[in-house]
Length: 304
Image: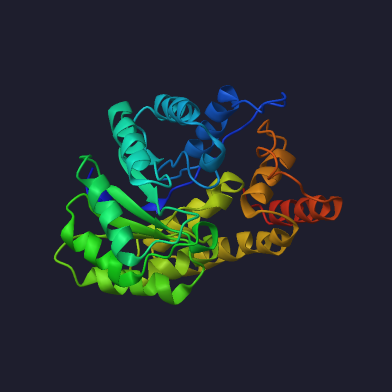
């Protein structure tokens, strides 16, 4: 897979759950969600991300989810497998398994819970990269992990390691995203920088980034894909309309964990995706009403 193929809107596909006591994975609903996203024109598929609740899945469940997604996609778009774990050894194990199963690229979140220095993060990614032969996308989301990949560390990893070819920035700091793009542009190598915050997709593209890994594409895949499609076609007004249309969901994030809100919104669209795994699945009645209003308002604009 070439770095130039890492582009566009890549949904971190949600993992549907059954309504049984253990909230087992609903693989049929997962296939339906993947097919819906593909039919809407997304440019990649990212199972086992934050929206896919990788943090709540066992190793065996991760294997099963990845197998389902790869089988359903059938090569129509690249599959980016989320393989980051807390320790280097765990991350190597999951990354090697994803490569064996046929993933096209790996998205590797930073270790979490324990605070890591930039040297430790650098060494972690170098160690993982030595064990695989497919592209690696670094994944920075310090509000969740407690660890921040500084722009200089991203630049060094992309410079020093052949298979590290990009980064997803979900820091929420637009200047950090711009620094990722600016510093990696200096390298004698193609590097793909992706927005991890949905509200920053168009800014990322204007700055020279490659697209976005967009959680809200689980709700409105066609509209979010159009941010990229319109931009590439030179229709900046159309790209801005699509960007603005999905921004309203942000106001509902105060009612729960953001990926809980997104999965709840997909369920409220009438899709059989279940709830997030407990305990991360409570949305108050006021929040449910707010999500319903956002869905109705966006639908009234003809967005899907």
